[in-house]
Image 1 (tube, rainbow, N blue to C red):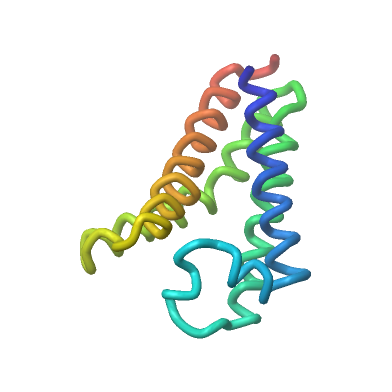
Image 2 (image 1 turned 180 degrees about the vertical axis):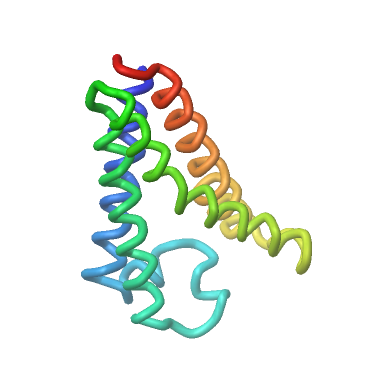
Length: 130
């Protein structure tokens, strides 16, 4: 189950990153709450898209047997987890987001997915060589 979830989360992050890189306007307008963060910045969206692509690749590389590959899973989970922590720190400083779409987008699409990925990657790393 751990390996299946790593692949699933890896594909999720990889597809999100590719979408950000190749169609930033579409991504910007499709993700609930994103337009309320300010005007579109293609360079910034592309930077983040590359980070998500690397995260997805790392999570999927963590599926292979061996302790080193478990470390790839941890590395792949690092950016999404740090991204989630940034959102949480913004909630603490600026208040919890308003509006149902933005709340769901941030709590599920950013924080929950990232924490799940970090947990699954940690479990994979702890499994060692299997």
